[in-house]
Image 1 (tube, rainbow, N blue to C red):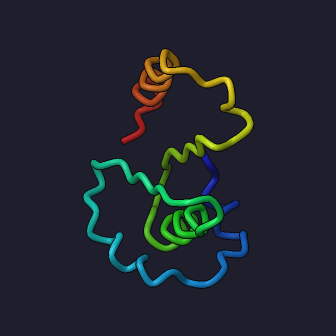
Image 2: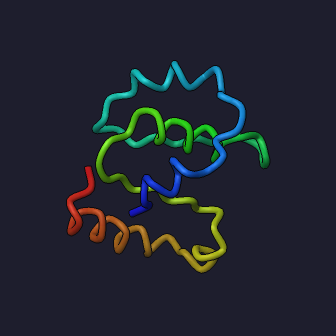
Length: 88
């Protein structure tokens, strides 16, 4: 779980115009944002979280050095962690 307070205190940069279009994504769906490196994906997600998300959420940055050893079999463990912690 990623503390929302940390995101709210961060510099959120230039407001992304596409942010308004993300409001209509149903809560029960995962949001996957992909694009070329350094295109503003993290900034967009941080802006979305800061503006629209209340309560707890799961934010997984697969490009993190902490996940360099993440393998296909680890998705089962991730699924169990999500279920155990009641993330929706």
